[in-house]
Length: 218
Image (cartoon, rainbow, N blue to C red; front, side, top):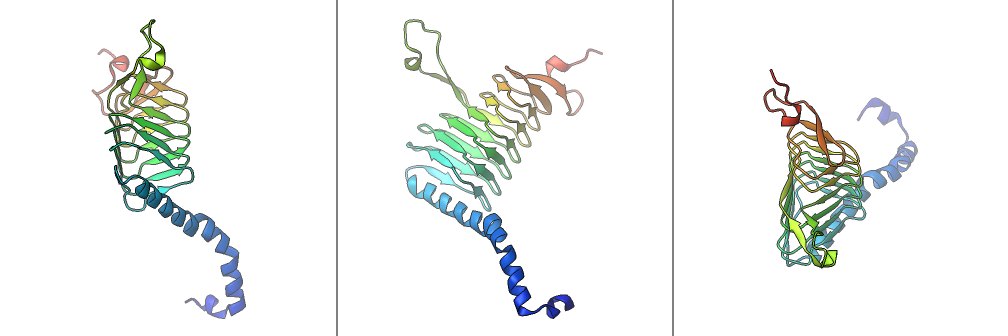
């Protein structure tokens, strides 16, 4: 203990403790305790499924997992689900989330095959990630009766998907998808892609691996 702390009176110490107690409860102890309760409830509610949370993973308010079948939801270490994350896993679908992944607000993930998020991926506010899309081309059948087209997808390690994007194709490692984009075809690694549909507009990776759209003939 420092000499300054030794000089402080017991009353001053108590006042200092009480001053910072709400912040400690509101930003430290409280969120950790509520996260632990949410994780426990998810595990108790899904005894029929395979679910795991890694060490120091934070499950924030509004976390919701709809998983009536024997699916899989596996989360690595230090993952953060900040607020109102929703995952819907159909049948034997599988969602795998690596270490240090960040989901900010209002993220929706729908999976019937497999969706993987690589380590340190960042998924921003209002993003929707799906591994299927409606069939709609049969003019004799109502759209909701035509079924879906499914394919597994992966968001690579260190990839970033910005706000209000829809993703139903792969995003490569360290790729960056600009806000309000629709990823309907794979985004190559180390590539900036924007638009609807998302198209590569810049490349920042090792020379020689540029997307075809951005290659400069020598």
